[in-house]
Image 1 (tube, rainbow, N blue to C red):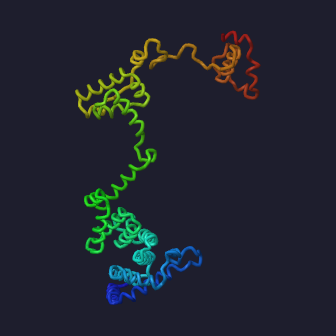
Image 2 (image 1 turned 90 degrees about the vertical axis):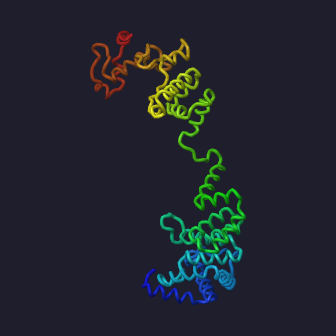
Image 3 (image 1 turned 120 degrees about the vertical axis):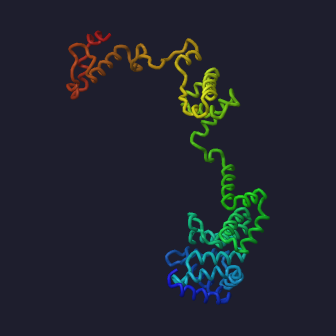
Length: 377
């Protein structure tokens, strides 16, 4: 607040002497001016969005509702007036939304009260150390009253609990909280008593997560893969220690899938890890370099007719590119063209740079005769 401490003190003392009727008339005039149509956009007000016509209170009714609420909020509105007169000279958006919301809540028009409560929570000063949390207890109390009027008692209890935690000395917040505790389910009341607003927020978030369809739930990376692999392992070893299970799941997916296809291979790996756990302990099991199956083990599992190459084997006989749809002569001709491009592997007398063929790519075909093909064959 701008100005000296003496000025602030004088304003507070003056406001404390103002009658409630004058304050209600002042605030209703400020609210009506703030919700007048904006010259640049008729759907927006000058400072507040206009109230829809079915819900709008006349000037006299708005002033009366403010007067009815004044016994609850006299110290609040005095502080708002002091802030406004000590700085810019007029109330700000959050202050006007709060007073208008309280008036409409008194009138039972809770849809409009909820709209104003959300404006207060967005524009009022934020609490230090709590990012995005409105620092006005009455902002949360208005939010609670609107939600309670719309029959959302759990959310109303949460909002009122926040207001009560910010201002434990308020008897209004205390009485409203006691009433809401009787209206909410016992399970929610127990969570609220044990963990306060933070505990209830977490509980509601967990409940909402559980109600989501499976494809919308937050899951760790590769969650479904690990669950699938655990099910396959538990088919053979339902009581496997958790450390051994976690170690198996660290294997590459292809290796683990191959092992689980064969019960004998699964037994080998489980016995191997169980031996490490029993002999060296959990700490060394975490660092144990678990390997996949060897080529000899794969041959033992799949039988003597297995076709494939073990690790470190040389190239397979007849290895090379086979072009589909070409006869033997065309395949040899294609191979010679590749040799020309690589500049190596040509018959004697044909080795050399491929630069001479750059201008005429078909020159490679012209330089290949049947004798060359016979040399390759």
